[in-house]
Every structure is written in structure tokens, then in C-alpha cells.
Image (cartoon, rainbow, N blue to C red):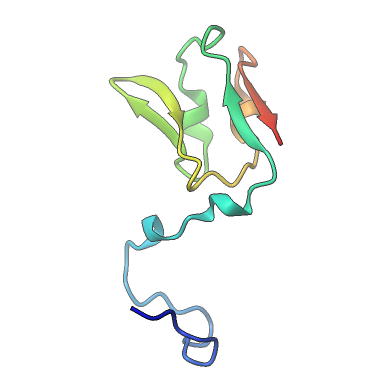
Length: 90
């Protein structure tokens, strides 16, 4: 499938297919990325609760990493972490 040129895209950024956010890798917008020190993490999951991009990966009730394809690097997870185990790195 050929990408559409700017003249072929609907005005206003119309979403023609619901539920297609997964297709857009918005992590490329990021300047800083979150990095977690697993030894300090208490698994409180506040990072998961507050992440506006749903970029915290959780498995079996535990944080297992970040979805860097969709994380925009806002830093909310690092700010909210009570153990300060998440740092924002370039």
C-alpha cells in the first residue's frame, strides 16, 4: 500500500478507522525515555495508573517494562514514582 500524499489526506486529520492508535508509533516524538532500576521498584504500579499513553507494560500484576513505541517521554512516571526508581534519560 502506497502512503498517501498531503493532498490526498482528509482535511482536519479525520480518523477513518476507530481503534487505530496502535498503528502509530508515537514514541519517535520522545527526547527523553524512562529507565527503571528494578532493584528499587516496589511494584506499586503508580506509574501505570498515571501514564497518559498506557506505555507501562504490566504482566501478572507487576511492571515489566515500557512500551517505547508509544511512550512520548512526558516523565509523569518518574515524577509519580515514590521510590524514585524511574529516571528520564536522553
